[in-house]
Amino acid sequence: MLIDRRKFAAVSAAGIMRGFAANDRIQVGVIGTGARSQELMQALHAQPGVEIAAVADAYTGRVQRTLERYGKKLRVMATHTQLLEDKSLDAVIVATPDHWHKDIVIRAVKAGKDVYCEKPLTFRSSEGMEIVRAAAEAKRIVQVGSQGISTASQQKAKEMIRGGKLGRVTMIRAAYNRNTASGAWIYPIPPDASPKTVNWDLFQGPAPKRQFNLERFFRWRCYEDYSGGIATDLFVHLCTTIHYLMDAKAPSRVMGMGQLYRWTKSRDVPDTLNAILEYPEGFTVNLSSTFNNQFAADSSFQFLGTEGTITLGDGMTFHPENAMEDNRWIVESWPEKLEREYYQNPKVREAELPATWKARLRPAVEQFRQVGVDSTHTHIANWLDAIRTRKPVYEDALTGHRAAACAHMVNLSVKQKRAVEWDFQKEDIRS
Ligand SMILES: NC(=O)c1ccc[n+]([C@@H]2O[C@H](COP(=O)([O-])OP(=O)(O)OC[C@H]3O[C@@H](n4cnc5c(N)ncnc54)[C@H](O)[C@@H]3O)[C@@H](O)[C@H]2O)c1
Image (cartoon, rainbow, N blue to C red; front, side):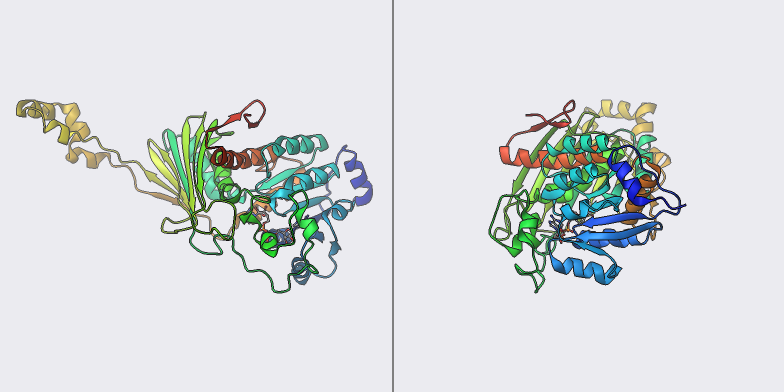
């Protein structure tokens, strides 16, 4: 039996309950239909029992492309406010630039919608707990869009770390390096963009008011009015994965250094960023990114343990440690007799002589790769499943808040030239 959706939405808006019959199609509204959103909609469209029902965007070209892909039946709303008033929608995707996320997510959960919000969940760290509380009060599902943790390779890596296969992991290194204009977010601007096709006021929203500017509209990541640059765009993915694999909440202390060396005309955020994050669980993280060289592959992501290393990139690889003791260069500086006696000791021979190393060499590299499964599809499927079952999602609001907060800590440290600390009670940056 199909549920009377209107009646049901009214009940759920009152915060009582919501459920879906097996044959009920989840009605999704999409706020922001830009580059990422097109990927999300493709993933959504591939899932059973769901319908892209309504869209809102600040540039007509994006809406047009969505209609070209998903048909003219889609309801086009002028603004996100109008879309959120549509009681027939069960859930929304929020894929606007970052400065809009908090307002739209909070309004959405208050309107009784479940939410998929792109990363970073927040634009400022202080917004995080506001969202967490609003979602909990409204009993709404919020999935945050760092889709990497939905991959089987990251889940496998987590299992290995938990099971002790890496020994003690005390150091993690991760980097994103690029050397192209598109990598540095200088995207082409569509030729039909103008005040007629772009709703500048809708885009600006809570950001400082500026003159109409197409660079700002289409390359918003380059400006701190709308984005936290490299930290919120890229580091947030790394931190989500680190927290997931290491069962960690947040770093207790963060130090960052950022510089704008090269792309000076196109932005006010750094093109080179380095950060050290120290975790109370007993490990330290080095994050780095440059937009001025791509020699180091952008997939370098290493979990370094006393017994082995996991690298993530195209799948997951485990490299066993084959650490061998070797004190020869020291002992050779001793008197000859002492050197001879040292190597007569069976314990030393066992530990240090190459002949015995071989026997102790560990098994070779292990690789894990899942072919043909796209993480965005899995992450979206997990969200839809949670909407139906009310079971927790992979990346809820608190998890998304903590990952985004790492990025905000890095940026604050860069600005204030000091180490920034996390307050675990407040779940926010220590003031
Ligand atoms: N998970 C990932 O791998 C991933 C990848 C890329 C982007 N993202 C995230 O997705 C979000 C969107 O990024 P993008 O690359 O698609 O940017 P984009 O500029 O291509 O798209 C953003 C769209 O939002 C629209 N918009 C702005 N304000 C709006 C409003 N108030 N109401 C409705 N629409 C509005 C713009 O017109 C634009 O079409 C960002 O938060 C970004 O960090 C995530």
